[in-house]
Image 1: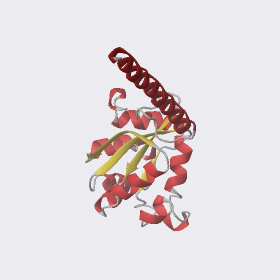
Image 2: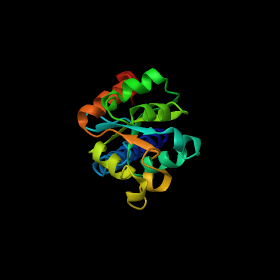
Image 3: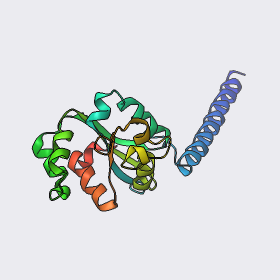
Image 4: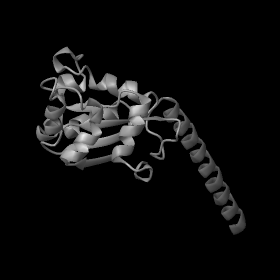
Length: 183
C-alpha cells in the first residue's frame, strides 16, 4: 500500500509540474506576442533598441522616476540604465552632429549642468515608440500625456532625448553602453 501511495503522489507531482509548465509557456508566449515584459527579462536581437536620456532639467526637478514609469508602462524593456554626469568632452562628442549649429555651445553647457539618466530601451519599433512617447521637441506643441508635455519647460529644456533613426540609435547606445552591459 505504501508503494501505491508513493506512486500516486509522484504521479500528482509530475502531472502538476507539467500543467504548471504548460501554463507558464502559454503566459510567456502571450506576453511576448503582445509586446509586454519578457518572462526572463531579456529580449533577443529581434527587438529594436534606442537610446533615451532624461536630461538635467528633468533630473533636477525630480522627474526621473516618473519618466521611467512612463517608459515601463508603455511596454519598453530597459536593457541598460545609469545615472551619470557628462563631461564637456563627452557632451561635445555625443552631440558632434550639431557642432555647426548655433545652439551647439548652449546644448553642451545644458547637458553638463547636472546629472542625466541614460537608458538603452528595447521594444518592437522602439525608436518610433519612444519618440511618440516623448512628444514634440517643443513641449508647448507636444500632445497631451507625452513626457515633454508633462515635464518639459522649453525647446531647450524638454526633459528627454531620443535617437531618431536605427543608425543613430546604434551609435548612441554604444556611446554609453558596452554590449555586455545590456540585458
